[in-house]
Amino acid sequence: MWRSEAADETIESAGGLSRHQLPWTDFDAVARGEGGPEPVRKLRAAERSRRLLLLRGLVEVSAKSEDSYRPLPSPEIAWELLARVERTAPHALETILAHPYTGTWAGYTTRLCRQDITGVCPFWVHLGHLHCLAAAAAVRGEIPFEAELPVWQGKAALPTLGIAQLRTEAPFSVARIRGSRGRVEISNSRSRVRLPANLSADTPGWLGVREAVAWSDDRRLLVRIDDLDPYRGLYEPIRPERLSPVEIESWRTVLADAWQLLTRHLPAVAEALPVGLDSLVPEPAVPFRLPSASTGEAFGSAIISYGEDPAPLAAALVHEFQHIRLGGLLHLVRLNHDDPRERLYAPWRDDPRPLGGVLHGIYAFFGVTSFWRALAAAEPDNELAAFEFALWRGQVWRTLTVVRADESLTAAGRRFLDGVAEKLLPWQKESVAGAPRTWARLAAADHYAAWRTRHLRPDPGTVADLAAAWRAGVARPDSAAAALSEPSPTPVPDGDWHDARTDLIRLRLGVDGRARFAAHGSAVPGATEADLRFVAGRADEAAAGYRQLLAANPDDPAALTGLGLALAARSTGPAARALLHRPELVRAVHRLLREESRSTPSVEAIAGWLGRFTH
Image: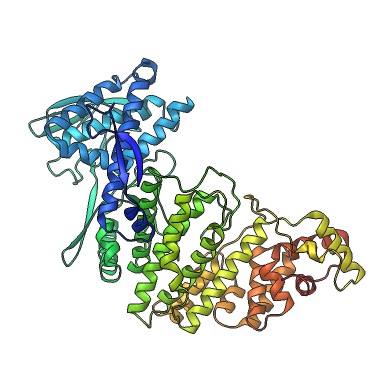
């Protein structure tokens, strides 16, 4: 059983300490992606107490120095208002404490305070957000109050409710808010905004936070679609990015469809997810992709780009819910010792990752795998679902197998990964149709080879020996064994790369895939004519196209990998092996030969030679 000291369960007694407990049974259930809503409630309770500690710490430290909060009143005033809300309308306080961006703000501002830096705004503006939180709680609790709020570029925020837009020429200023008998006004010297009775509505000077409600039988998903809160981003405060009425309705529609998929195909996850997800930050659509993100400080929030297809959105919701669960768990228990080195390959990222990031990715994509597995089983003709299942079950298992032996894991971390493995291992043996399985294997090889090309640097001495051996016509040089050594990755990439071929594969395998591939394939960012030929199944034509690209730029990571894939589609010859398993070595040797001689062999020739003794 894991325990964590945290703040007591009230504002007024926040100086006291209690213990949050998570039994091993709950820990193991979370690791397996199971357990229902109860473990999530326990994680949320611990997160509430953590936020109280951060809030109280900020108040105690900053109240000692007027320079930290002027021209606003002392943060003690905001704390006292929160205490009033707790006494008269505790539900309103709970809503504000549970708000994901209360956590983001508390973590961000605490770091500013400890590091003695200002951040995006003057420090008093960040610290003054506590007054915004207290005022929002008072508005929700319908208690009479007065307060002063920080104003950023004319915007005064009431978290969970909306923002008031005031006239001001100053980038940072102060406004007054008054609430009495159901009437709330925010004003400065030049303007006055009265909040509407329906706070989610837009009225002159007011933009309300809107919601989406999705039903599937008796199961409900209720989330705020928050495009206003200044602390809704990943790293630092951001300005409002208002969705139009058409855009908000489009989000509601696709969320409803995604919720139907989740409740139908992953009912256990759908039972727990509404307890852990209450806010969604909408991002603009990204062509042919659906990126998403979250942060451990914003328990309950997911940042997701818009897409019209509900299946990828459902997968993204599961993905971010996994991050939310693990983020909450990590506030109670350490799964790994501190190790910031960017040293591990993660198939879902283009850069090397530290162990902690890889653990998050394993757990998130374990959830993604479970969704696509369920959808593929329910829809046997859905080639895209089968491809996604085959791709991610292999990628997650490959990464988990490497990480389970890492010395930086704690005992709890190994136990956690054992729980993931318990569910994931049997999935490796499940049947997947031939074409999706083949495309998944190629997509995995594509990503890994491109990552090696960009982030591994072969030993210069070995490269020089191999180049000399090539010039001397040696079939198997003495340095052949040294060529098999694995260099440590560097986070600095050598060359650009777009994962365009995998985007094209998804386009081809989706609904009306062949027609959509023919119509829209050339619009996929980064896709070349050779890529289109490869995904169309014309490997020989693709290989010719990649040779032309390499003749113009022999260092192009995408063309190097593409040639390897095209050659491998016809045979498993030495050039294909080298280009897919030692591409960084092929490029390094070819690069040195180019520098030393006017007459340079082709990349394919070097790959064919190296492939005879590197595997």
